[in-house]
Image (cartoon, rainbow, N blue to C red; front, side):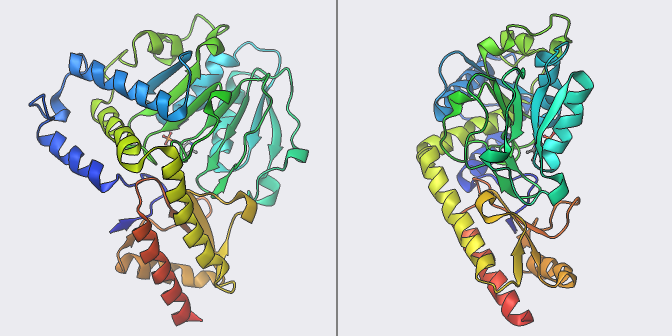
Length: 360
Ligand code: PLP
């Protein structure tokens, strides 16, 4: 089935093949990836190469650490305020733009003062704020936002915040999907399971200077400095997931041709899908304001909501998987992560046009 799931994304076919081979035996090692020690020199080299690949894909200077942590993006909701907000007088600025930023907020509030700089809740998270609506606090310890709201299909197409306040971004669902000015972020985190690999590992990049005032009494596992000192091998890491992310970064660099090429492909996929919504005479209705539409997750409803179950059933029968909207809002969501090819989207829009013609 062609997989449009908003949860785990699809691995590119070329990578999937290497992953399958590595389960039998990793080339040059002679052991299954599932049985290689995390204390081996081979795995230390995997981590070092992956750090370099991510640094170079994002264009980050040497004063950024690249970490591979566990606990998902959810653990970052707590781990980052524990390092940067505990004991602070000034509130951190948080944007509340959808489901996932709404999960980050209460976790930070448990640790220290938080100010909601803008919230789209009253409008049902259908749009993102304009610059006129945003006023950032110069004394905030940091600004936190989510670049792509996976559930509502809202994506910031610009950089937010002020250069004199650390900028922290959850990029779980658009990480490594496009080039950008990433060194203007002090910290970026993203779990792997959308664009870059299987669940089990979360990439965190952070500027060294960000941690200078972090408390000394954090549990070791939740202290970025301990993870940095251990090169992400503080305890047993998810060796398999980290290796797959390495293969995906090589694919991005060598086969796709880098983030600019990835972005061109992602834009082509999204354009095709949104064109299909926009030319459907209202049969398909997009959730997000046009200017804030996500290139990763296209969220929409049918004009006649009672047809949605039929749409999903027919799509499943036609070989399309994962199109159901997130349980919090229902409807339909087509996720177009990096590993999904343009051909899959071409097939989906053909199906959608056919379904519309049949039910109009
Ligand atoms: N942030 C975003 C933007 C997400 O899309 C998700 C999950 O889909 C999360 C955070 C939570 O991630 P995890 O399940 O890895 O904790």
